[in-house]
Image (cartoon, rainbow, N blue to C red; front, top):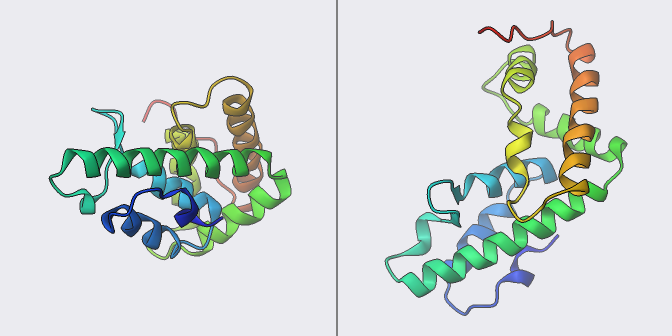
Length: 152
């Protein structure tokens, strides 16, 4: 999925996030990145390159939001098998955390729920969560992770 296709502005700062996005090899990793650009205090997407110009910040936010929505829509219609393969590729690309610790944290913290753009409601949101929970069940078995302790 080409990030630049959704950038309508001519300001180069609107393209820097897209350049970074292209360096992420997995769709799941891109969703993590894009969700991380959302400021939960303002509901606006922000990038360090936004600069001080409010028009530029707004343009960047609109472009990132549109791309996040398009990327999520692509993700949600993908097969469970392709999602599993993509998530395994994402996990294999993480070198600073053990697999068991990662899956345990995902089971306890459910970070996948925060990857859904705010504009996505209803069946798409529910499908994402149910698919991811199925994948988590598989990963739990693959990596031998015990059920998370909800009290911790």
